[in-house]
Amino acid sequence: MPSTQDHAALPAPEKLKTISKAISVLDAILSPEWQFRYYSYSSKWGDGEECLQMRNGQGDEMHILFTATGCAINGFAHEYPQPDKEKVTKGLPAQFDEFIFGEPVNSIGTTFCLWNEGTSWKTGNIENFDDNSEEMLAIFDGDPQSYINYASDYFETELPLPTVASIYSGEKLTKEMVLSIVEDLADWDDLKKDLIEIDYPFDLPNNPKKSKWKLW
Image (cartoon, rainbow, N blue to C red; front, side, top):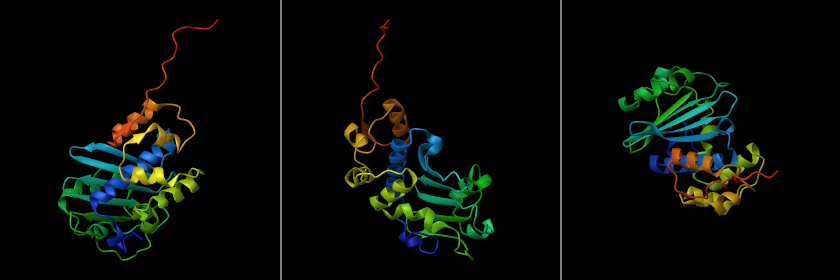
């Protein structure tokens, strides 16, 4: 299970990005209202930067930065011991300084930190592995069933494995795939905007046009 204690279990940055986009697409389908989603993804976080954001609504947050040359993860678990940030980020490459020590991450806090410049995952000096990283990083094991288990608990719904697996593979999202997850979708155009923000391929219908005629 991926964690700061077993960071080698984390997938390589490109695979991690694919999973991050997939779980954000699935959350966008299940929760049209952004504030109720666990996972959201911005493909336009900064110049040449993309970012996954996780918020559980109870104070825990995680940000994962993706650049052309690497990836950095900042996790904050509010009920866990807060370590010396300088220690858990010791050895952090300079390219991630602005992300880890700038906003919004700096104000949120850092319970654990990992980074990868293309070869392997690394952490700083960790004195206490009781940091909730195993729970927060579990979704990135690469198994679509992990998202299904999460959705069953959080959204109280059962999802079809074939559809989730297709999205994990980056397949183009279609109307049929969406309707295999939810019975109906109120606003297709809003979902398209989310998918554009995530930078995920799709072939979806437009919202039905309202008639200009009134019935009296």
